[in-house]
Length: 195
Image (cartoon, rainbow, N blue to C red):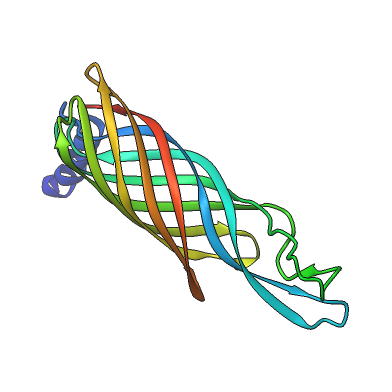
């Protein structure tokens, strides 16, 4: 009977009293960019037309860091709210009063990505230039318009004191929903590193 209660008691104690070593951090992030998207529109007789447009996007959110303050390779998980600008009326003289197949207002989305940041030049506790790769998707969207998102590029970070970092990144981006759509995102933010 003692062995049945000893293991749950040990696990509970381990969760309530963790060891003092923490690796990682939390941060605030902002983003902006452009992405290509196919826009469908209709004339008065409901004939369908399509055009590819570059639409701006912007957002803000939080990130979690996995790794020590002096690591060159860290894991990054981001969750953020993203706002896609509405489509622009096509300059098609044959369709003067176009009706869009998607909402003509801005689209709100919840996006989640995970990735790796790899420092290639500099000092992790000073100025560090890094390359980045992320994968994730728009998982909370209106009208079931979810998509897969992949990003790759580079950036830099600078550490103030023992725990605070600022960073910026410019990443090529690919959204996939039925078709691949290219784009680019920039990120900027601040992190608090625990270790």
